[in-house]
Length: 138
Image (cartoon, rainbow, N blue to C red; front, side, top):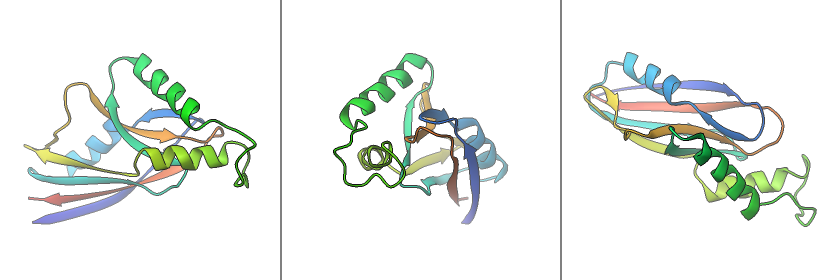
């Protein structure tokens, strides 16, 4: 068994879903592991990860609007140290996930035809986000 790890830095442009599938897949392929598990971990509390459809852009827009409704910006939150989008960003992260585990089969990520890996930025302003990747296998 072998393992490998790295940090990917993703620059966001503010709120939204940013597909990172190509960058994650490119790193995974050069590791030379045919069968294994890849963990993708978001090192932040106001951004998260999703595996979601990557064909229809309407899906991303609908997801973003849904989360804006269930965790809206509001002056009702006690935690607003970094502005009105601070606490809603934490709630949106709590409702999604910061870690994904994806099987590697025959040297490729075992994603479905329409699946992509997304960094979900919950803050309004641009951020530099870090994703820790860990691949284990043979």
